[in-house]
Length: 120
Image (cartoon, rainbow, N blue to C red; front, side, top):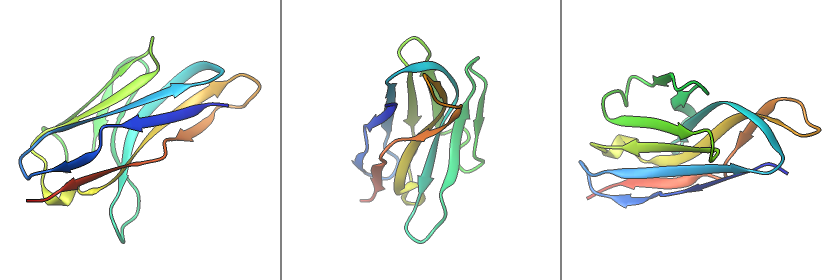
């Protein structure tokens, strides 16, 4: 089975930085788009950043200039480097990937979520 495992969340002070990482594993044939979403309490899940297999990235307006998404196609990983964090960035962050896996149609897979808390 395809699995998505995240790491790197935690507590950080305003203005600080964190790096989230996510690795996909299993009978993967190819990974198309990868991305990071977040969900704050009482709010809907929203796209933070996404990146194509070729490396083209797209960001939510709220994180442009502060967050950087990157991926390693050889390692099936996607990272999110977050700088200039503020309390409004507090949320559970989920990685996402559109994967073609062995004996399965192309579909989205999700990580379990990692908590990011920005507070003094």
